[in-house]
Image (cartoon, rainbow, N blue to C red):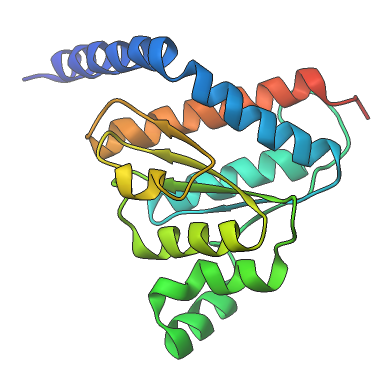
Length: 192
């Protein structure tokens, strides 16, 4: 198989997932965006966490909120719980890797904030623990997960279930959804 065949196959596969996504996930996307927009409008903080590629997506999303996406606007309070290596390693060492996000959220999160959790499998214990802590503290939980993510969905106020079990596809669709949220925030938040 040459590169052209691989590319065509990937594009066809992804376009099929995108069509299903728009057809079935739009209500959940709207629900998630409503929570994120309300938190941004009221000065609350958007937290995000995930592992591996999802950690990178969390950092990208929160950077867009604090900086800007396309339109110049006031910065929004947003923090990826994946970035503080001293906190991650200390908490992991003292409490276990399962607590690396939950412990940070316990110390930083406030009622009315939003936690965006990303897990392609929906089974990442440290992400689920963060969602559990969020729910006990009055922090709304928005989950983005793959087709097998029902365990994480149980802890979410809104769960966007991407109709794929392929890790790369779920990650790529997650990035598209997060960019849609950023673009919508550009439309609804006042310009700087």
